[in-house]
Amino acid sequence: MISFLQITNGTVIIQVASVLAVLIFYVFDQKQLRGMTWRQCIADPSAGIALALPLIGVNCGILITRGSVYTWRHMGGAAPLGQSQRVLVLIGTIITALALLWLVRVLSRARFGEWPWIATGSAALAYVAYSL
Image 1 (cartoon, rainbow, N blue to C red):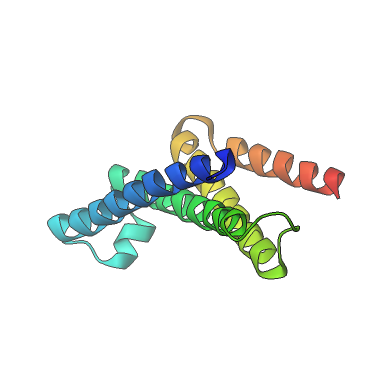
Image 2: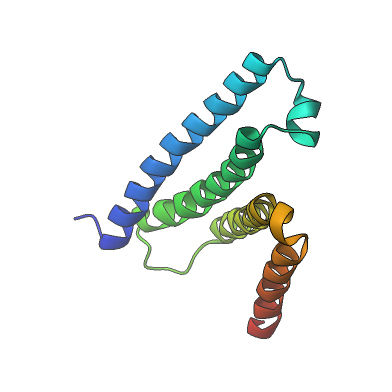
């Protein structure tokens, strides 16, 4: 029987993969429609692309993290996470955290300047330092 953790992770993986596909398609489509180069998409993006790019990062990180936990649970999950799975969880968490900071920056910079994403990152780093 599939455990509760597997069901929840599997459900999120399916949805995140779908959102990721839509976001990637959106960026490619907007790039082509607007005749933009990849450099323009990164350095001077439209509002939609500026929002889609960090969301792609967030969803990639979630997919890596949830996928590795799902795989661990599928393989039995009685033992602690293996070294490769811990590395994948860490990589996924770092990608998610950085992409969320990017998203905060995109959404708040025009109104509030740089402090929201810097404060958010500082709080997260303080939490990690305190927890270790």
